[in-house]
Structures are given as structure tokens and as C-alpha cells.
Length: 342
Image (cartoon, rainbow, N blue to C red; front, side, top):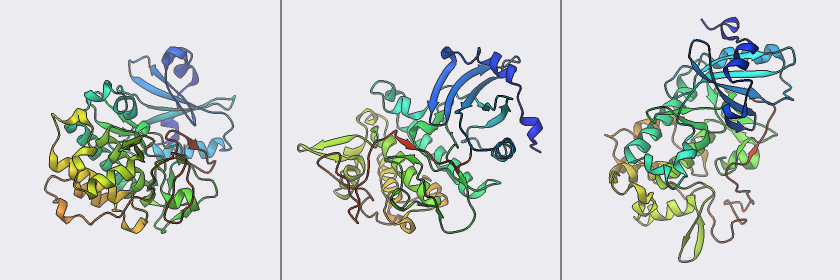
């Protein structure tokens, strides 16, 4: 049984573990606070997130949500070890330490990305899919992550993925979708129904997962512009045109040429495009995604993807959907919502 008392850490212990939250121990900075590496007296390595001040959440609600999130146990999720509350109203979260930083740190670096050959990338795609399936269908509390992206996928010592950062997550029930007046997430990864109308459900996470697949295959960020015949295109439209024209391998990261599997690459591009379709109902469920990533699944059994929700070319500040709504595109730019989990 996970109890609030069993999860509580002393301030002095975390202060000592991080050398008083020294800059040398800082390993990350997000919209909800800075993250520090720490080592406890018994030698256990941890990551401590020092939450930004100004949270409207009370101490009791904070403790209850920590207790809920600590129940999430899956090899492809970063484990929440506990928390700390101080008299000065500081809130800290304690996580397992994951040594190889985030996926974006390696994937989008022209030198480091060579560490990720195709078998490793395919393993990352499958691992993230399993972790998301657990959140959507198998965990004690069903969760919509709402901010799935390369920087929120951490890599362990063996380059296996762990989904992190539930600062924007929401617990959901079986209703079709939820509404919010304040859209949160990262532009480029957010589904159109969410970005335009503030509606979200599990299929909004599917959209983000599709973007992530296409980034992993191509080695390019969602914000990247690809120039073909002098005309710039975004990553989604370029990927869809390559797939439509039977040129899927042109979309692949060139560093994979010595390790790729033609069948797996083609299947992943096809699957990524299914996930980023505009109509929510046409996107596959997480359980079907895990099935389609199975080696015995035939590409011929997949449905035909429609053009991605966001397709544009030309000037980067001109983006459209089918209803011609102008969209911002800036990978890494997040919006905030006070009605979220930790």
C-alpha cells in the first residue's frame, strides 16, 4: 500500500543530496520547475524537481495527487519516489534518476543521434507505446498525459525509454472528451481539436505520439522545415507526401542507412501518419498501436491515412487546417493550465 507518510522526504535530506540545489547538480528546467540530480546517504541516485512557486494547489491536494501518481508502476514510466513540503510552502517531487537525459538531447544533435541506430529507435517507439497504453487503459488511474514529446521521454542506461513529466496530465473517466478554457502543451505536438477548441481525450495523446514517431524516424524536430525544389514544407506534410508517393525511405534519417529495416521504417511512418489525422475517431487507439508495432502485423492491414491535420508549405508563419484556422508553430513553447496534475 502506498501511503502519504511513506512517500515523504525531509527537506534537509534533499538539500544535502543536491548540494543545496547547486547549479552543478541542475540537470533540467521545465515549465513547472528546475530538476536536480541528487545522491542520498545510502547511495541511491534521485532526481528532485523543485516546483515553481505560485501554485494554487493546497498541501492536502498536493499530497493526495502524489499518492495517486506513486501508484503508477511501469517500466516505461519514470517512477515517482516521493515528495517534500516545507513550512515555506516549497513543494518538491522526488523521482528515480534516469542517466541518459531526454530523447531530444540525443535525437536532434547531429553527432549524438548516431548513438541511436534503428533497432534502438524502434525499441524507443515501442516502449513509449507500451507506457502510454498503460496510462490510457491499464493503470489504477486512467491518465491523459497532454504533453508527450521528445523532451519528456527519458532514456535509461540501456537507452530504454521512460515517459516523464506529468505536470500537465489529467485523470479522465469514460466520457468522450474533456473541455478546458486554457490549452496546455507544446505547439507542434498538440492535436487540432485541442489547440483550436480546447477539447481533448486520449486521441489527443495519440496525435502527439504520431508526431513523436515521425521525429524519431526522420531525426528532425516537428518545427523543422524541409526544402524540396526550393519550397519549404513542415515535417508532417513532407512525411505524408513521401509516404503517398512511395518514397518513404527518403523521409528516414540518413544516419540509419546501415541499420534500418525497410518493413519497420515503412510501418512506423504509416502508423505515425494514422496518428496525426485530423479526425479523432480515425486515429488508432493505443492498444491498436501496440498491436501494429508487432513484427507479425502487416502494413496491408492498416487503414489508409488521410493528410495530416496541419499541412502547409511556403512561409513558416502560414499554417492552416481544413477550416483555415491560423496556428502557431514553435516546438518547445508550452502554455500553462492551473487545473492539472503535478
